[in-house]
Length: 187
Image (tube, rainbow, N blue to C red; front, side, top):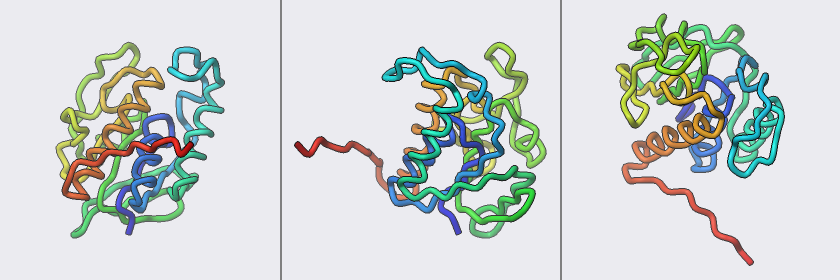
């Protein structure tokens, strides 16, 4: 059983996985390889002088797996509530997790299928988003939303930050105290 299953490995999902895995939470990161970031040229991401979107996505996945996130290349087809969490079904397998983060970018179909509350998007070209509170919680206890699908701006720096925010909120809930991750220089 995973502590957290994250659907989508773009900036929001990979950032969330980086934080949850680094915090020692058993993390599953499921990537269908459909991130819109893979089409981007990025020059407005703090600390990045210019980068191809596919490179940013790959770096994010590498960072998450460095800290122990399990990366699965597959598409999620269903999420169902179980006694102790959720069953996350992909095209080729199934997994169990206590919490699920939807970081599906532009894709709201699965969210709508499983009963998450959907509302109109507010960003240009974003048709639908998952209704969630400021922490990322949705109308289904234990399912969270992060990034563009949660209604934040599509800019990679914003979606990555939102993924981190949601991850910190889940880690804090699991730990029973507010979680902070600050590493210090050793020299």
